[in-house]
Length: 335
Ligand code: NAI
Image 1 (cartoon, protein in one colour):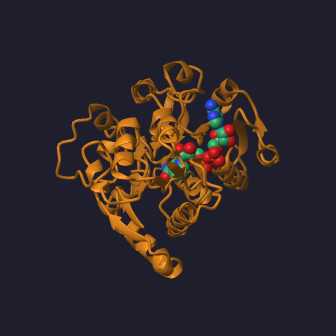
Image 2: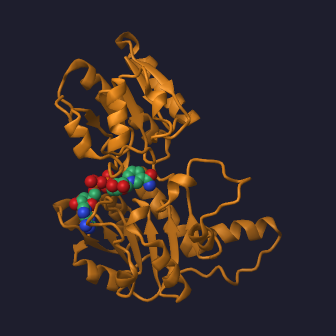
Image 3: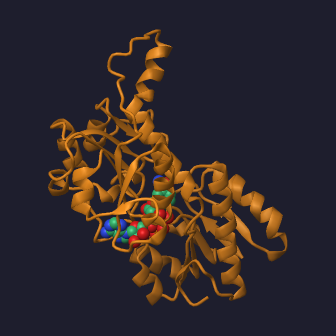
């Protein structure tokens, strides 16, 4: 069986080849790696494949899925947790098998969120540059103790819970908001309404999925209710934040700092080397001018453990599809 992987990076090839050779030599799986992201312009690269393996910025809307189906593709393997970028209704209509990797390493993303909080707070990014230029002045690098501060976790699923556990270790008061509360989180923190979380938290960290209900959860209206001087961290999906509203809140000092690992328009930028290009996204370039903003290019998941888990689960999902066995990670299809 031929599987065409889109948006394939060298590290994807290494981790998938390793698991393929270790566990699936006898299965006759063949992986074809394509650097291009999947879109209507590139979908022809999937011809001859029975399965397609896609990542977060691959386009999986109805026209792309219909074209894939026309080529004989019957399985879509998402090598990510989020599935906001696939039209599941269209996939079901076409009878496609769709599976994802629901929890490859919640700690990888949680630890990155914490790294962003600590970096923003203690200005490590600025200190690094200063020291390398022989400037050992401290003025401008003043932080605060995380111990004793209130941190709001929006979305207390796997990653939110892992984040809350670490924050508890720092001695933070942890607030949570989630329409589906869990006992595990309740044992660590306190569930409150979203407005209360926004009003009381010194740091707000987003860990809920992107959906119609959560798009622009952070908007001009919610920023008007956020604690004055709060820090906002988003390692979930860019669409949770109205970036223009956040820029206004940074300018008015309502927000003291922002860290994002995801960005609304990230597909044009992230996972590409754009260092020699003129970036024509004025919203993004405005963000880059703030000393109290950190952007990382969707690397929350990027640990050795997570890459291994992604490859193992994706190939396990494919094996379920190939063998007609039930698959616990199914989003659409009959297996
Ligand atoms: P999960 O499904 O375990 O948890 C998500 C939680 O959000 C659930 O408890 C759910 O009830 C809650 N939720 C749903 N609607 C909500 C709302 N309106 N307000 C507040 N909470 C709401 O998912 P997991 O594994 O914790 O991942 C969370 C998100 O992190 C994913 O959806 C994905 O977008 C993002 N992610 C980012 C990565 C990165 O590299 N930066 C890597 C992996 C995931």
